[in-house]
Amino acid sequence: MAALGWLTPRRRSATARSVLAGEAAAEAARKSSLDTERPADTEAEAGAPAEEPEFPVVGDDRAAAFFDLDNTVMQGAAIFHFGRGLYKRKFFERRELTRFAWQQAWFRLAGVEDPEHMQDARDSALSIVKGHRVSELMSIGEEIYDEYMADRIWPGTRALAQAHLDAGQKVWLVTAAPVETATIIARRLGLTGALGTVAESVDGVYTGRLVGEPLHGPAKAEAVRALAAAEGLDLSRCAAYSDSHNDIPMLSLVGHPYAINPDSKLRKHARARDWRLRDYRTGRKAAKVGIPAAAGVGALAGGTAAAVALHRRRR
Image (cartoon, rainbow, N blue to C red):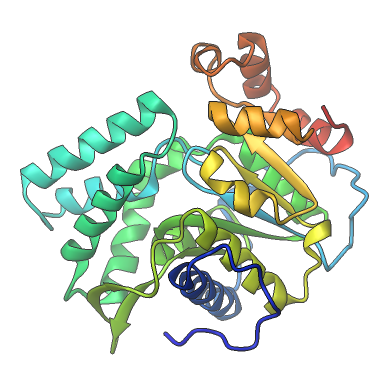
């Protein structure tokens, strides 16, 4: 996939591979959102807020929202759930499943991304899908979503995304997960589309290589910047949501950054800059990262109400 060549000037803190990954993700996201109409009976309808919240940006077509996926929209890491589904379909052996299981257990216990584990998981996934058709993996991905991911969506974060949609804004997932997997999740949640890691394919068959690098850290910021340029968005009017300090470059791009289920480093960073925070984990999990238990439980009980309150006041 060719990189976009008509972008506005950017800061040079990201590596050349981060820029390439970001541009490739933006191009893939725009193509998927233009090619696929959102179905009228999406799952998002079931969880939509009963009352449309009032935002300052209602009808602002130059504003959009960008949501990290792992541990922000969904519990755990999408690539690990995808690996479980592929194992069930005999794409690889038990020893590979054991590695996926260990990485997932680490993610759930630590609550943060471990770069070494994530890189190992991506390398494993690339070797597994090499030689398979993109259409085959997309079809399987739909099944895996129902089996392992649908029940792991955070209701509170989902309500926030729906609030942006109700305000007339586009909503994008931004994740290190494969763009095909991210696109499936976005479509099933009724979102606009997804920015994700782009695996190279030739004639519809995966080569086992990436375009650029995984969409992680600075590459996410480059993807958001590229998509904003292509869509004519004003980033100062956009919002971004994440749980991880790795996404500070993306959060810092927008005028309305939100820390959702934050790790300790992001929480500290967000509080120092008066960013908005919400935690939708259980009281016990929230206490581990220093969030009052009552806040975590209350947020789970009032997902839609929290979505409205999040936009109406700053901490």
